[in-house]
Length: 366
Image 1 (cartoon, rainbow, N blue to C red):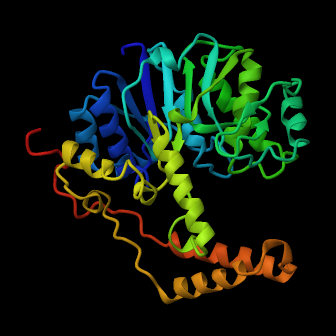
Image 2 (cartoon, one colour):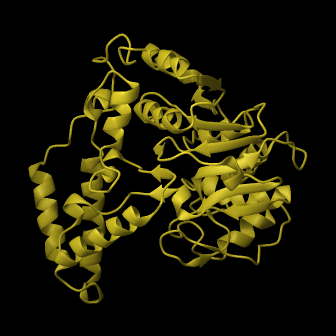
């Protein structure tokens, strides 16, 4: 495992507990692989001392990167590009989004290859759905639009090369005049982000830039199977109104449970519940920290139902009772607005402060 680095971003306060869980999952299954968490230099003073101790105790590093003025205005997704561009001595890098955990060990030979970027295709088409977008970004670098396609992970639709930037493997070698593929990917993203002719480029700049950077490198790409980036996000709770909604959700869970997952991309901790992976966060917390409950580690309390959420649920139910094709433009606009309002209420959660943490979060025996 000395040839591979697993890296991710640990950006206080939001990505701290995710980073704790990710590191725990890696150390459970791959105790000897190099692990590096990258933190923006300007956040160094806000990194809890307990986390620094936790990383050291688990033979992992926290390295600081200069994120100031690398994107204008600031682009949090850009931190992953800065992390990938940072130099490392190992032969290969596996970048993981922080809202990920490793479910089982893997053989690096299954992912990595010379002059190849390994990445999981995106679940559904987002930015690249208007096909006329692609000639613009490839044309910026005098590159033709690729003729080959990949199969998207959720919709199974065919698409021009378009990847989820949450699981990316690549060699740590100079390429196309850059010190590494990570540096080339960063440069590609910065140029695309600065080009105002590219429509609605945020928040997808990292994903837009990846296949273009691969083409600039003259490298191949290896689409990773779903097991390497099993997304657990789905409609749950108030989003399930009709019996059909519940049936669809059950089928989605069955499909997730049937995958022999290596990497779980959970997006938010709520999505792991109801799947066969439920209880894994608690297992990791109990094995690698002093906490027995996930909410004690995260310092987040479950969001209580509010009167506003109940009203929204009822309104969504009323609109959904009308077949989609029969809805008026006013109903469609109202449906979009009320779903946006629901999302805003759900996101109204205070970031963890870690004030209730003990002086050390290591288990007693460490």
